[in-house]
Amino acid sequence: MTTIIGIKISNRLESAISVQEILTKYGCAIKTRIGLHEEINGQCSQKGLILLEITDNRQASLLSNELCDIDDIEIRQMQF
Image (cartoon, rainbow, N blue to C red; front, side, top):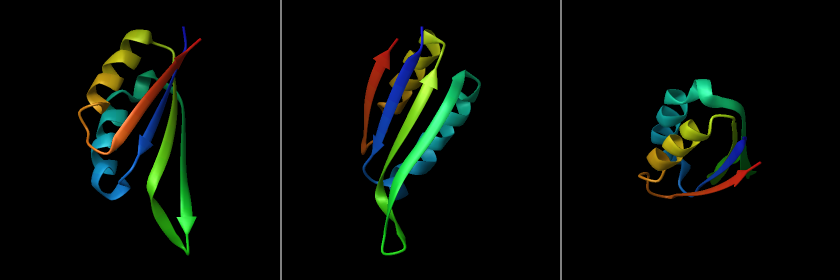
């Protein structure tokens, strides 16, 4: 089974380091990672979106649970 995790980050400056540490911890389980953010007047937006493709259901669940502890992020999942 494949899980797609969407991570919406509301405050990139405050949350980016914590999110990156967790993504690094589960890096071997992440098959695809896409990061999206807007640029406004030459400056990166405070908001961002990360899409992850994970093929290990257990790892996807563990990763999501750790991400839930971070303020200013929202998580959604799809399973195929």
